[in-house]
Length: 312
Length: 291
Picture 1 (spheres, rainbow over the protein chains, first blue to last red):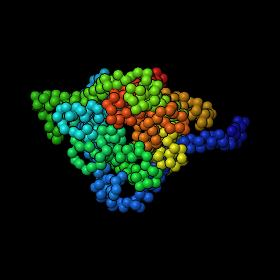
Picture 2 (picture 1 turned 180 degrees about the vertical axis):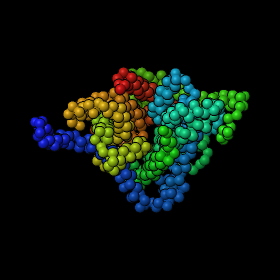
Picture 3 (picture 1 turned 45 degrees about the vertical axis):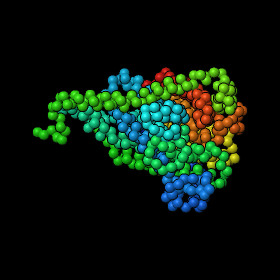
Picture 4 (picture 1 turned 45 degrees about the horizontal axis):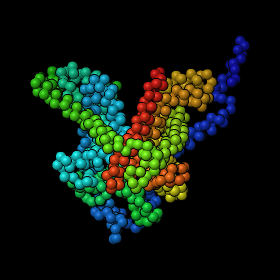
């Protein structure tokens, strides 16, 4: 670095604060790290290409209109029928029952953890919820098929061996920790002053929880809901094991139904010849699934941004 | 002076009843998950304990439930765990370092990168299986091999590792970096000698948790060809299976004994996961620095 000439009376030499020459090692390192980051971009591109290419071929043989308006899904029959509505209906029905459990109960658990629980209780329950969230989905599927379905039958609900209700309710309990965890984080972020102000005015804990905290945390709660719905739509193993493989349009949860994910799983397991129309159905249904979950993710980001409360 | 819309007037008994009722409702909400968890664990243990013997660990699958075991499956899971460790940790940490230390947030391509990672985290796991099927199994011609399964699981948990690593790196206070720069360190020296060592506990915890999640994944492996009837021990480029897939195959068998065998397999899987999670939490508690 150029130094000052400190002789009295000398003109000051400007200090050059930049390094003398480039360090090529640094450039290489930055390049290598950027390359690592590119892997994620490559993954997204790969997913898009992997889904689009066979789907385009598929939609040359089966018209898009037939695909979305047909109500019979029988790709392996002759004559084959490619109406995707039964799969959509199956996914919708399972998701409904999963959310029926996960959304209200998850919010309730979050309110309890955030507003009512003593610190010692919190320290036990939060990790326990993490444990619940960490159990593999194949285990939940096993539980739904071998314990929950017989249980339902024992208490008098006449369910099929494979049924939507079992899979949906168990999936709901699987999603409960997600809703609870994210909602509770959102509620913890609400400043204590808001609560204290309400308590000071004579509000009860019920009133503070439901009229102050929950509305303030609503963006986080909605984000957790959308995430749970998204996970429910994309979940495979529980429905593959417990909900059945008959693609039919039904609103009765005691029957079996096949979701998009279960169809992809079941078909992918078998040995379908590459390039056949059955092979391409995997990608067409996969594309539909991907677009739906992608759209939900975008909606979630938008909603969170719209409703986010900014505190001082 | 009006107090506004809230009807905060006194109604002590009504409040007490509503308050207690609400509290009970909340308790029910919390308990449902745990009741189910308890029922699940008891059920699995009751069903599986009869089949928990050395045969389970050493023998391959068989059509006879008495002789069937999960040896190749357990080996497959362990091999995949090591492959994952080697692949996903460098990639994830490298990306995290780039995003936290090197990337200029103003640039559009870096913002796109962040959004991209967020989106990848939301993609259903079976879509990763489709990706694997298209590119690795059929596209590259790798076939239904262990390496393909490991690659796909790497991509699946990569966003999780990236997020965990970023949190760990962000937790290192800026003063550490500034001090190092002031002493004349280059950017890489600051990262490699100050930031990374300080962030390692957080990175390690996050990676182990991500690995534990990957071990339990079944759907992508089904598509990438974790064949459900494998009798030979897995090799890198040979046919393979993994414990969750083996469990799934047993569940789908008609004989009831296979259901019990599946429960035993589940016990092994849960034991592996419990150990990994406990280890990760122990790591976090033992080595976490409080700045």
